[in-house]
Image (cartoon, rainbow, N blue to C red; front, side, top):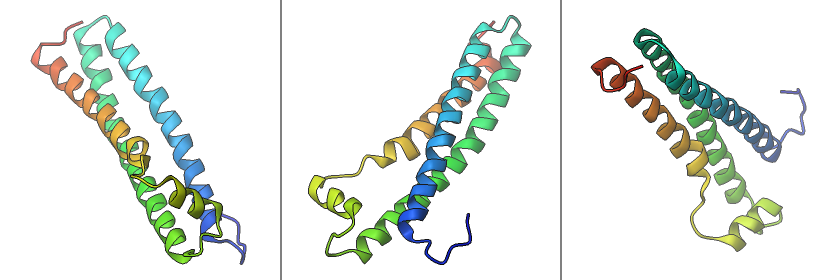
Length: 132
């Protein structure tokens, strides 16, 4: 990050949201490649290796995505708390739209669900349910 005395929470939010979007994109590409590779593999050993590596790496990627989402949630809470007059556009939108935020879907639910799918596929490849 640049060494700037004027760096504020909004800039921090933008930075973290950009990193999160990039990691999510890489995660989706990785998830798709593992699925395609696992289901097109020709031997049982290849299927096991692809899904096993896929589930380990996906959980590592999921951990970084969840951590980034936690940071973004914290930053937004602080921004809303520090802006009771709703001068910042994000505060106004948050207030006017109301309801429950759906950030948890992209930051928590989807990566966790995808990683769980790869975990189940890896287990199924070892117990013989999923064969090449």
